[in-house]
Structures are given as C-alpha cells and as structure tokens.
Amino acid sequence: MLFGGRPDVVGIAREALEFALEAAEDSHPNEYLGLLRGTPAKDLDVGPDDGYVVTDVLMVPGTETNPVSATFNASQVPNDMRNVGSVHSHPNGVLAPSDADRATFGRGDVHVILGAPYDPNSWRAFDNEGEPRSLDVYDVALPEPESFFDFTQEDIDEEL
Image (tube, rainbow, N blue to C red; front, side, top):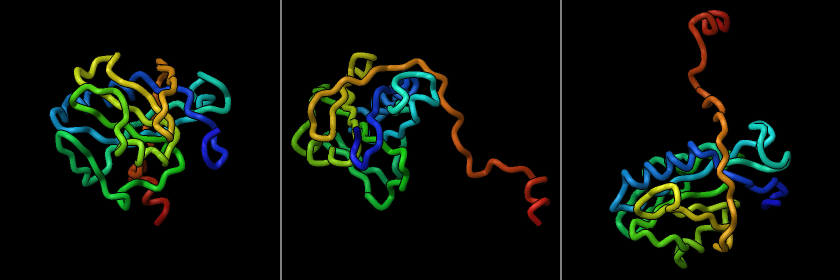
C-alpha cells in the first residue's frame, strides 16, 4: 500500500513510457523531469483490482533543466490525487538514483529514471526510498484526457 492508504502502482502504460523516453531524448543533453499520474488498474482491465497504472506524464510549467539537474517550483505542481511519482532522465545513461534524487523521492510511490540512449531498455523504477522495484509495462488503451473546454455553444446557451 502507498502512503495515505492508496493502492500501489503496479505498472506503466507502454504509451506513457514511450512518451517519457522520447521527451528525455528531446531534452538531451539536458535532464528531463516530469510527474507521473495513475489510473486505477481495474479501469484499464489489467493488474490487481486495487492497484494503479501510470498512464500520464505531466510536464510542470517553469521546469528548469541543465546537463546535471532538473527542477521545478513546487507551487506549479497540480494538486491531483492521481499523482503517483516522478520521472526524470540521466543524460549520462546511469540508471541509478543519486543522493539528490533520493532526497526528492519521498512524495509518490514510484520514480522512474531514464537514460541515454532512451530505448525500451533504458529505464529503471525505484520506490520512494530509492530502492529498485519492478514495474510491469502494459499495452492498454489510454483513457481520453479530461478537457476543461469540453462543452458546446448549446451547453453555454442552456446555462444562460
């Protein structure tokens, strides 16, 4: 079980992993940093009924990166109960957390490190204490993103 009694993260959607690997490669030689958002596994018809699957990689506005670090302002992080961890890259290809990484792993259940050459084998998952953990990769249809602007003129007229 995750902190706060929430179920554990049991996997990552292949599309979410591929997106993160591509974003990290695009950021190279600078580090890449993002947040992971989960969907209940039961909603995707995979894994245990009480687990989450990472389905989204969130970019935090104002993220600053360079070849050895990436940071964002905590006030820019969405207050979202579906945030389950983080993802960042090591352009040098080392797939192990640094002491600085471990210091930031306290929030969230799973932390993914990506490394050059950013291929399907260039990543590892860690728990919130920086210890290696398994994370299954699932081929699932991702849920449609929620849209703030998902309304029509008819909806507006009805409200008025």
